[in-house]
Length: 350
Image (tube, rainbow, N blue to C red):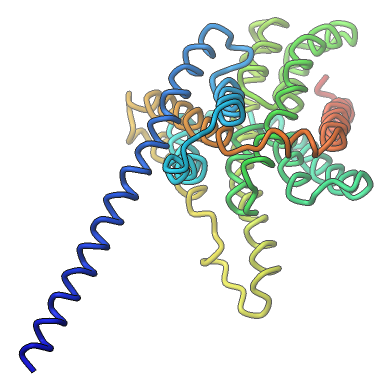
């Protein structure tokens, strides 16, 4: 009996030792991938400072794709890369909320509410219809739709974990949306002057029809100072739409998977609630002078996460996806830009 007990104790100790070794190995593997993402993110951050039109997050995803496909990333780095592209991405969304004032968003958002809601509805409806017509994968269609309708990379980052998008789909959708952001920076001011738009009208147009903040700022402030101020706040108001849209996707996914046993609490994107909570804390003054630091930390965390997305993306698979998702992004973007003008004309804001 005693001998058997000794064997049991020895066996339990061996199991514990094995688990401890496996745990330590997982931590070492995790940190290897995280360190790689951090190195790429720092490089991308500095490049983004020199070329703000592109921005650090886009440089990060491009660097990640190049490194991940040109070099052989060690297998032990994969857990850390996955951690960055999933968990750090969610943490980044929460931190970004700390740089947002809901009161400021409300004041300008009230004027542009009809345009924002209209363009968002057009973006999602157009993406859904054209995605089916072009036979684009539903996940990719959803990412392009929310990216174009709300706020580019941040919206894609918020919705991607909810619909289980893989790194290839995230990378492709962000690259597609970014492509039309760059085009918009150059053609929007020219079109605005040709149409004789007011500073307010152009600011709302840029804030609702251009996705990335850096591109909104570049286009609107080149039009006028007032247009830039209106566009920036309109863009912030538009960002708040991440919350209801993310929950809407969560409900749809939950119902599709859960059927009768669907539970909202189980599928709720709690990190989006964290984003909203941080925005509320900033609005009531709890964050005080630290608010800009949270916004900066969120942008850097996005850069780290997108480096991980790039490292996990398969370039051959992205190329194989073909031109149809890019065509989808172009058509949705044109639909949103035109809808913004039409709605503004309808409410006499141009």
